Image 1 (cartoon, rainbow, N blue to C red):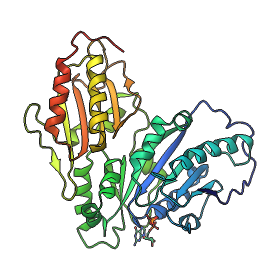
Image 2 (image 1 turned 90 degrees about the vertical axis):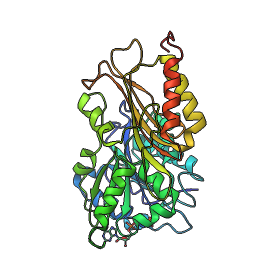
Image 3 (image 1 turned 90 degrees about the horizontal axis):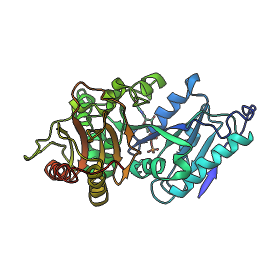
Image 4 (image 1 turned 120 degrees about the horizontal axis):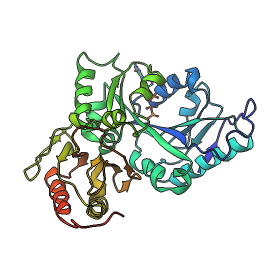
Length: 364
Ligand SMILES: Nc1nc2c(ncn2[C@@H]2O[C@H](COP(=O)(O)OP(=O)(O)OP(=O)(O)O)[C@@H](O)[C@H]2O)c(=O)[nH]1
């Protein structure tokens, strides 16, 4: 069930300017375990004037929606998705809500907004929401996922990571990890959590904050917006932060305690045919997608001057981006993985196998 609240529509919409825009609306997904400080952070972010034109979608689990009442400011465009979690029962509702927001913006029923923020329930698996932005045409055509921000409670976060798989998945999917409540954590606890999070998801930026105090500049500055430039690709991939997996060897990577979440990097100077890459991706995403929390990287493909940029979340591959030239001095394939129960050795062996195949494969 989707329920709309507080669509006050104050002020005129920017007459017609928002309709059928060429630009896709950037979306920030705010996730994090129960009580980890999502609403507090959202509130603080929305208090900044530059965030005024933000439409907010808040998903609450249960019969009585409360969080939206706590989001105090700037929410002319607040929508609550209730009675279920976005990632499962009300996923269709989220699609409807997003398209409805655009229609209302275009008709003037809503004030103009140039970005959206989506706050999930504390138990959501953000992967299925990320998938909407890639695989659901109604959403993918009009919105782009700008950032996944995950809050982790400095006091309870370590225990939640040990006990709940959802907490680990939320961390693995993040572009930015925000450690909250460092003001009330035991000395050293927040720093230890920052360290653990950096090992779980070496590609994400990690910031420790208090009482939601994070500026939009700090948030968006930590998450590159475009991959077209070399510097942005480097900051996005952060391959150096990942432990290398040994090609042909055990490729252990780093195991975090609790869930069997491992982060590791694969680097090889070998190139793969376009056909081989397509088949390898088809194979690992369909067969092992559930365990592949995240994969990002640059791949050297035969016959191309620049790399193919890959980004996959579980079974879903973001549209691959073809760069005209390599952003790095070394034109080598670099793939970083965060997996749950999927050892590096198997992935490396399969990549190598597909490198050997289809040497004469065409570009398609
Ligand atoms: N001391 C302190 N309290 C915080 C901080 N961040 C959040 N809180 C408090 O923690 C409680 C939960 O914060 P929320 O922002 O509601 O957390 P949430 O993730 O939105 O919670 P759910 O939607 O229930 O999952 C509230 O009482 C906040 O005031 C912080 O940095 N320091």
